[in-house]
View 1 (cartoon, rainbow, N blue to C red):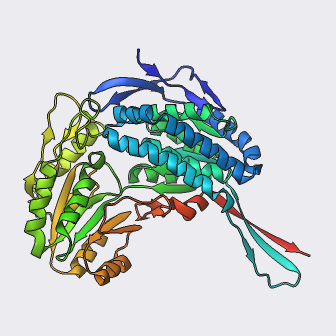
View 2: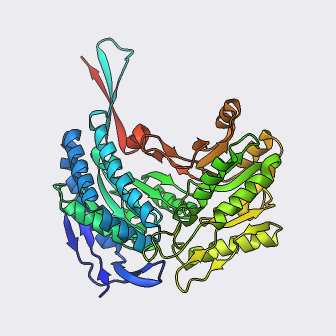
View 3: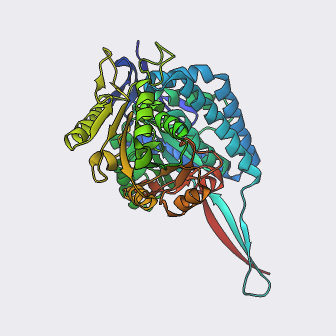
Length: 478
């Protein structure tokens, strides 16, 4: 019998009367593995109301007590790591090793955010008036709505919940309808802790229904979303009605610049891993390569060989594969369309370039394209699949100009042995993050934030924590 999940509201799992249910598929087998309610606006309002009522007491607790709740939750996650990882693999398609890393990193992230309990700081500001003190306090926003993507569905719960809770907010989380099963397990772990009812709530459903209702609720003080530019734009428009604060991590088209003096083997490995990890469905990993013409042949030859060696298949049936399926048929069709249009526009196919027919699932062969023009769609539009287009350059000025020529501004990378060149690139590349001689993977103590259409605000570290606070300035005249 297919599992039918229930919403988690005010500390209880509750049935949603009437309405539609959305099937959830295993992308490796195309089989239905569960169902979720397409939660209507009235039920979403109940979750927000529960969060609003509970937050009043939660916000008054010392932060160290809120941190203890996060640590209790992280301990529960570690106790259930194997089951959680297998659930993520089944519904999302990533390989088991990466799912295990995601679960472990999620627990570590909650512990890291708990450490901020004694480090949330305000300011004392000098006054112009005798006998006056000016204080700046950081206070909770109230209710935070978290709308999640499907590519790292478990970790993104913690990325929104952790800083929100330790700073005194309550949350209402809407998981992706593609990957809700891990969120249901997360809710069960919350229920097993002493976190007060109403502080953490989960509502399942579609973006245009349940997600829209969350965005429209005037009692939501902040909306934190990770996903596509198109959806982020709609959320921002909906938030405008109530002047709700938004925190948006959107798409990326990360450039990787490979200089003639680079360690070619290192750059090939890092870029290959960017396109294979999670089947290329990672917004901060390399999406386009600019390689110095002098090393183009060596780089392309080694990259094509590395991509050729990548194995794929059902990650639960064969745990030795390097990558699993794309999330669904729509995603597969998007990747296939981008590649075919690039070839018609004059790109050269080095390897891959076709759907992999395995009987079921949504698989695309690891692909390398050369001869891609800067204005080509494949160099400008996010692919979100195991495909890497390559463009050549003659000078660093050309490479930097082309790298910056994008509507996106999330991450970037450069491979060189020249520290002067690396620092120049850091000063001139207009992206939220730049990785030098390493893979594109951020640290929890950094600040993951983009420019242009890659988002507003950011996550992680001190600056990510303070996204979930509002300031309150007090003028005290003695």
